[in-house]
Image (tube, rainbow, N blue to C red; front, side, top):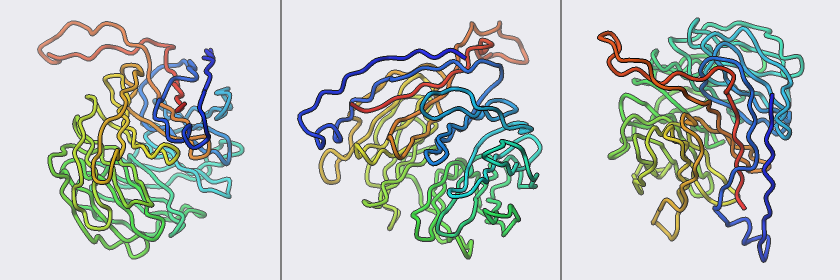
Length: 338
């Protein structure tokens, strides 16, 4: 594993001015290596770990140094990772076998294999209900687990293909429905679906971020971030983003929602005055860096990608071939605001 350090200097007049800056910049680039694709990654500040999905395993890195701690296997078709704060329990979603893996965060050993719905994808822990929610993209449902035992507590029939989800920490879960261009809203304890809210002009929503104090959802759709009132479902704004948009996070230190775009950019969106949302910065990343996580303690942002070679020649069976990933180039990029 190779790490490139990039020195930075942050100059500001006051701490408050520095906190309000949205000048995100690269602070570290680390090559992990290996082969295969990737999906979600997750920062765990309590455990000082960065969990990164990578083909058939989870790469576990030290959150600060990026040094490799180990791997979690077997996780065929790994998508997402969640950990339960205050415990040594974590979970992965495995798209190929339609399972979740319960693992020990200290030993990184798998402890339980849990059947889910079809193609489990996004995953989240909800502190209010003390449950883990697994969103089955092709199953149009969520498998609900007791966080401490891994036992299935129920299923939510969502009526569409779920992607990323967030909690209001008071018993309500919001989740994007990719094929319906909606946000579904359900109760974390009763599992009753309460609303299906349309995303205006937003199509194929994937990433979802949440400004809890201001009750604002940020849904990353195809080349647009839709801002929605989380209490009424009213669409507040539609802000253009880069192409290949996938993930989203909200940075409380800058009051910004950030989308990760597969074209190789981050789009930073902010409420510049009451009711007016704008893209205030476009950050250059690398092609393929479409998923994102944020460390809620340091407020640093992480994305993963790799270098690409030329696309193979088109064939009748594959008229639009994708460029191949160069083996050994899988990497993590870390960003911070000045």
